[in-house]
Image 1 (cartoon, rainbow, N blue to C red):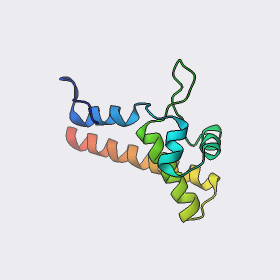
Image 2: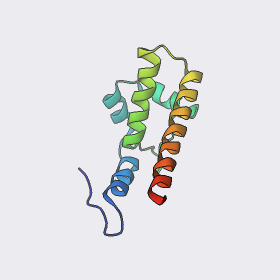
Image 3: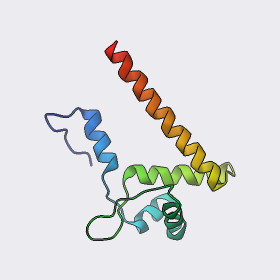
Length: 110
């Protein structure tokens, strides 16, 4: 279910906020991804994912967190990549996305 964009935000910004909204429990993420809860906790401990801890103390995961768990799982099991390499790959992917965003911003300006 998507929320309508506020008058001051663009649809892309509203979608970006929506996918970052902490909504899912650990058990639900495990069910969605097929990855065990202890494995997801391990990914969290080593910094591969960073769910939000609301004031209630229980972690909540966003759509982006779910997708990240899926990416990690694909790299680990489909490609046989170890966790150290997963971290490097995900960091490089994030940098590429940031650079693409910066390039798009510069093109709009210029």
